Image 1 (cartoon, rainbow, N blue to C red):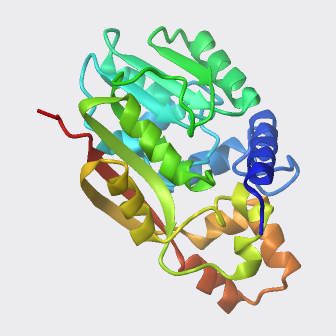
Image 2: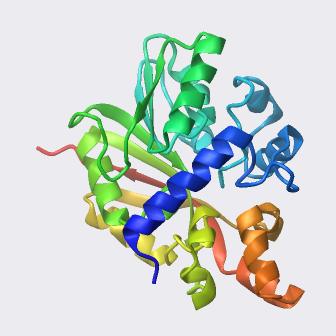
Length: 279
């Protein structure tokens, strides 16, 4: 079984490489991944429009998501947005355009290389209502009852302590604040060789949990009106294009039927929830 501390170290190491290579879940620049075209193609398939992708700074889109939480977040002028696992900043920049100069967007990421990259992207494009903080999503460097909405894109599945993540999200949201998460969940249990693989964890596979369990964790954190507002099977080609996922498949010499079986286990969901206004 992979230890929690090992998972964090390896995930951070893996995403540091991604930040440097500007690749889509890739650890090697010479792999099939890493091109701007591939990142754009993946992003379009998971819900981003051509207009959105052209409106963010170059280098902000690394093709790492599994949905477009900003499109479903109904952001309003002047709101404070918190992005959990902000990466190179694509969702923060899209949010910043919606909340305007009177709003504020904060991105949290535990990988220094990602935070540095996002800050560079913000600076070169003149974003003044976006900031990036180095921190863990299990221990958010954010005050209580601070933000209006929390978004996240294919990041919470990487955490070995999802209960703590959602408790922290609840803590920092204002009463009446909203949650809008895109993430990967399981429709049934993964095979053990993937579940116990650090490489699969970095590739967004083995950190995922069963869908019903994921929803229950959100509810137990205190959120109300928790609802899956969109769901789709995560495309197999995204896993195969991931150098970590590809290595798992090749190393196990899995036949195509087995690969399809694995792909049908993983689902991309968009989940909303509300922190209740307590009387």
